[in-house]
Image (cartoon, rainbow, N blue to C red; front, side):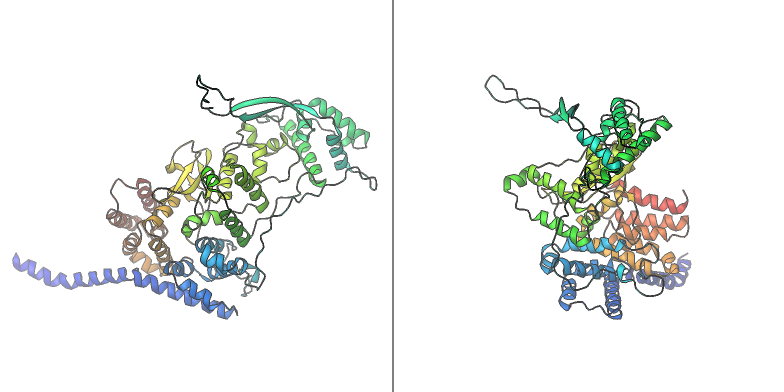
Length: 588
C-alpha cells in the first residue's frame, strides 16, 4: 500500500505542480500589477487617441491626474475607453477653472466626468462616430478655448401678451384669457397645514404644539381655468362669452364638479373625460400662447453649469445657527465620486432648482412630499385639468408637481429632486405597486457612508429597485437597491480598492471568451480579495459562466472568499444578490 501511495505521488506530483502553476498564473492576471498595467495601457491609448485627433492637453493637467493613484485609476481605468472621461474632466476645468476642479472639488468633477460617459448614443458608444468612420465633434467633450463659465440662472421665460391690444384682431386665446382675468373674483375654500395655537400650563410655560393641523378658510381670488372646468354655471358664462365673440364652436361641457380643485376620483365616463381633456388643452394652450404658462420646460443644464450651481450653494455663507437648523451640509461634496454619481446625473433645469434652493436657503424649507391624491392621478389629463392655472414652470417640473399633487410616483419625484437640489445624491425607486426614494447619507458620528431608502410602503430593501442608472460599469441600467448599497459599503471598505474593483471589471471584459470561461473562479476570488463589494467585477464573472456548474463554482468561490472578511450572518441582502446572479445563469 505504501508503494502504491509512493507511485501515485510520483505520478500526481507533476500534475499538482502544473495545476498550482496554472492557478497562480490566473491569479497573477488579476493582481495589483495587472491592475496597474491595465491603467497604464488605457492611459497610453487615451493619449494616443488625443494625438490622432490633434488634441493637446496641458502637461500639468495630466501630471495632476497622475499625482494621485486613485484619481489616475478613476480616469483611465473605470471605463472601457478612457478618452471621454479624460476630455470631460478637462472640459470642466476649462469652464470652471483649475482651483475648483483640481483643488476645491476634484471628487465632484470626477463624478461629472465619469457620469457624462453615459451621454453617448447607444450604438457603438465607444467609437463616437457618425457612421462614416470619422469622429462627430458634437459627441466629444468641448475643449475649445473659452472664457470662464459665468453661472446664470435663467429668468421667467414667459412673455406676457396684451390680450386687449387694439392694434390687432383678438384670437380665441385672447378672449379666453380676458374672460378669466376680467371676471369678478370668486370665493373658494383653501386648506393649509398650520401649527396648532400655543397652549400654556399653569406656570405660563408653552406646551408642545404637536403636529400641524388642517385649517380651512374661505378666500377670494381671481378666476382660474380650473374653476371653469369644475363649475357648470361658470361653463355657461364662458360659453356665452366666447359665442358673443364669434367662437361658439369652442363651447365646453365638463359637468359639475366632476373635476375640481380637490378631486380625487378617476373619471370613468370616457366621453366626459374626452370633453374635459379637450377643455384642459384649450385653456392650457391659451395660457401658453399668452404668456401665462411657459411654452415648454427649460433646458437641462450642462455638466459645468450643474457643477457650478452645486458648488455655489455649497459655499453659501450660512451662519452657524442656520447651518444647524438646516443640517448643512446635507451631504459632503468631497465624498468619493462613486457616491456622487446620482447627483451628477441630475438634469433638473437651473431655474427649477433655484426656486426650491431659495426656499431652503432663506426659510429652511425642505419639502420632500406633496399632496397625495386619489385615482385621478393615474389620468394625467384629468389630474392636470383639476388645477390648470398660470404658473412660471411647465409640466414635468417639481413646481407643477407641488401644485397638482399626485400619488407615490409624484411624491417620490418631489422627494428625490428636493434631496438632489440640496446636494444629496438621490433617486426614485420602485417597489411592488409603489414608488419611493433612496438617498446617500453620511453618519455624523462615524463618518460612514450609507445608501438608505425612504417613503417605503410595500416592503424593504429586498423588493426595491433604484431608478437611477447603476453607472459603475459600461452598461448602466436599473439595479436592485443592494447594488447601490454595495457602492457605499465598498467605498467604506476602501475607496482605492473599490476603484480597483472597477478596473478589474475592465480587465475581465477585455479577456477573450475562452479565458473568461476558464478563469472565472480565480477572478471572483481576486475581486473579493481586492474589495469585498466589487460587485461590478463579480457580476461580469457570472455573466461569463457557460453553464450551471460554472455558475455554481463561481458562487462557491465567492462565498469562500467573502466569508473570510464577513461573518456568515452579515450582509444577507448582498449575499442573496450574488446568489441570484448564480441562479440566473443556472436557469433556476
